[in-house]
Amino acid sequence: MDFPTIISLTETDLDLNSMLAQITLPTTGATAIFTGVVRGQTTRGDYHATDYLEYEAFQPMAETKMRQIADEIRQKWPTIEGILIVQRTGRLYPGAPSTVIACSSAHRDTGVFEAARYGIDRLKEIVPVWKKEIGSLGEQWIEGKYHPKPGE
Image 1 (cartoon, one colour):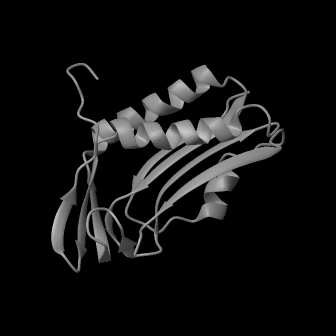
Image 2: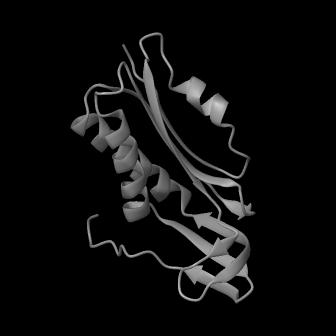
């Protein structure tokens, strides 16, 4: 059976029910979904309000890295059925979902939770997505901790 792998960068609103349907098969008995949401208040540095975030990505490289993450998940957890990795781009306001990582499996005890956690951690680590925070402190690009080395 071919298991679905959904990879997407999109400027449209995220519909969690539709996404879940894309990775749910007749054999699916468990799904784990991580959803990143835009905060309206941030405690990084000085406490401050966020009016909105602007996400940008280099689409060809981002999609390649997202597919790499899906491949890594399948290698580490061969019982995973469906994988969905979606990142929003554009302007997002507080409360809006910005990222969804979802994995499906026949049972909850087959690594589905761990696979979804791994997916979001790797996305933050290797996918070239940038965000600019606009709020009470002005505009600021938020830099991640990961800096790719040649060949990564």
